[in-house]
Length: 293
Image (cartoon, rainbow, N blue to C red; front, side, top):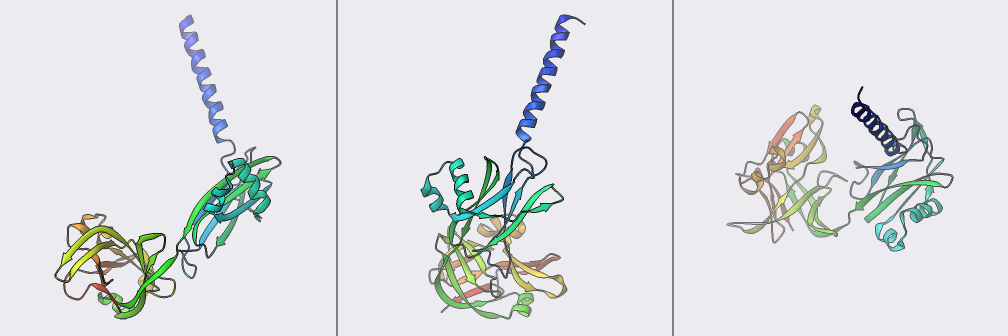
């Protein structure tokens, strides 16, 4: 073997060794298994009724088996930022002022888990967990923004699709509200039952017809809490989300709109896991409508 070949093999072996060392260094302490450093992660989940997804949140704190103790703290993000603490100093603050989590062993990961639900959060919150082992601390945070609403007007919501009328009735009283932190976000409060609101997002696009000028809005996919026979829970969305193409809303005549007096015409598709239950076709009285008082 010539000298050049020996040098090449030696260099390759050195590079492999460096890569292996780097990989171990990066991975250590980042999984909830048998690492030497404490590790923690906070995961956030949306809640469903009877909890309120606008103001309640489910959290899972995951730690590895090197975390002797785990603490968590939820506080207004503005309050956290006002403290001006470094990441290390804030970890100490959480340990001193937070709540100690009752971690349970997770056989699947080899680490520990703790589940909790926070309710009635209004505004932006930061939830931080800290895993401690002696003087070593590892922290993880997530953010949740609790929504607050102001009433715009009372009114009546009229359903236009036969399958939905059969389970919800044709007309129901509801309250139109606007989000205090996002003036493009509206909801029809408890439209489908307590805790089941219909949320809509206003666009910056205007339309006009013989009844006047209106503002386009979108209806993101959301559950209604209604049940349609053996097919299960009913959900709602606009045709653009159904077809996966926004142009159905803006260019194809399947728009929903809100007039200046808050009268709304709603072109929606209702569906279950098995398929379509019906949608507004843009003619006749099969639109859903909101009629303000």
